[in-house]
Image (tube, rainbow, N blue to C red; front, side, top):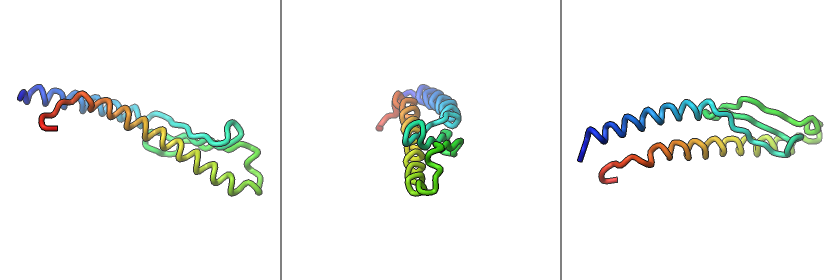
Length: 102
């Protein structure tokens, strides 16, 4: 067992993950419901909402419940995109690490 090789791999992985984490945190993910005249929510990689766009037609009083549902769906879509991207990219960094006994 070559511990120096293992430590070198771990250091490289840590550096890659740090860079990737920064990139992911700065990426903007968009969730949309209802197309161009619907609701669009943009979040960053830390899941903080950056922008909310609501189509003009949805701002009528009678659309309150529908608008609330559309916001929820768009937000969930954006969070899912961010989460999936984070999992896929961070998983690709750790795939090549060979740890004895695992």
